[in-house]
Length: 80
Image (cartoon, rainbow, N blue to C red):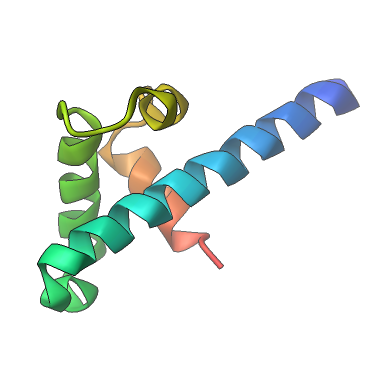
């Protein structure tokens, strides 16, 4: 069982990752208003590509760098 402090840190990281993903999606939607209607898997792919591009600010990239497409989809699905 993980110590309470470690669980809290993980929760904070996941919350920050969700925030960064939402920011990316909002940026992507400015360029493509129909993105809202796209399947989650396609949006996750676009987010993944953006994360791995040179356009992504380093501070935010450090937070989401280790996420794969599946991680992004999961974080998108629990966004609220």
